[in-house]
Length: 495
Ligand SMILES: *Cc1c(COP(=O)(O)O)cnc(C)c1O
Image 1 (cartoon, helix red, strand yellow):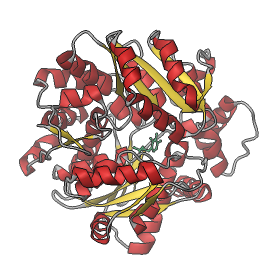
Image 2 (tube, protein in one colour):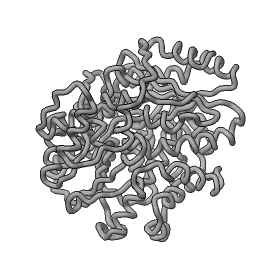
Image 3 (cartoon, rainbow, N blue to C red):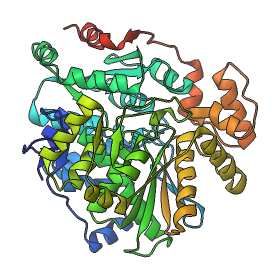
């Protein structure tokens, strides 16, 4: 199995792609071709647990890893770290409407599905490619990636991790999760700016030759734990494959029959993993791409114009407050039949003018498989209330965006194909917004009072990792201007 860049031809194996994170030309690593599951592969996987299925999926891509290495990584990631025996349960909320709960990990958001595994894949990859060097993980986060990466990489031998988050762009709970992080190899820094500023800052530092030289002198290399890293993507394919197996196993779907997926989308990593699952033979009919008020993807899917020259809004679903969806580049690569020059040109246009347009035939091909729509904070709030009122099921604000968009899709198309909705966070990560959606008073300046109240009102349990935060000490308080991110890094690394 070989990987190439979305922007120019190259030829490397998975360990090098994971260790590097981003290609030298600024593009993203993509598989040269897709391995597929046969009907008998699927039949075997139906009887496996999540870890068994994960080994099957990973083995198809990480062909430069031994079977023992893959099994060791998967066991380390998913044993004892999740509050559920099955890390990604598929809950049938109503007939044909299944919520794929991806938030049973240590940080209560779907990022754990990949970021509990990535540190193991990455250290194994680095050992294969550049033994003895230290990997410095740089992360820009809209809230959930930061904590999940910190949790995954804290005190992992041979790594250091630096996380940047937008000072006013994450929930109180998300901020506390990050600022209380322990570990001798971790740094956490707020920036005066939004997520896109943080992400652009990190991308610039990645391609800064001067910084690379400084690190090299100390036997260090940068890598990424953002979803641009293929090592983040491959674990996400697993849960779509696994949900298909669970649908069949529970009799909710006949083998070979199609289902739709609905994904609350920000950086386009989660929904892209569903596209990759389909490429591997999982019968997904429509990819329903749900956005909040930052609806740049809705516009793109409906018009073929990607235009980031627009206002940026902060919403009650902060992990989707994004205007540059990095992983869309990987979809474009597929849409343009692996034409890296075409992709490089579009990305160049995006960089210089903040905008690009795809031709009509490509748009038609995109719309064949994709449906895009968006939900306001109020619409998401109504979805929370309705889901709880009708089905006694409590969901978070991001999942609510997906539910709301799914309802719009149903009303427009009458397509009653069974669906899997990605449920991406515990409602307790966004307690004030969830409680307010239920019509309760949220006047309190203590986040934990609101958490307690949510638990009382809904008779649901507070996840242990969040309850424990109340007693933790804040350890990270630095906030820098976005121009000064590099200085913060040099200071922490002592380079
Ligand atoms: C990151 C995140 C998303 C968006 O996922 P992408 O892969 O960036 O599209 C949605 N919901 C939650 C809770 C998240 O943490």
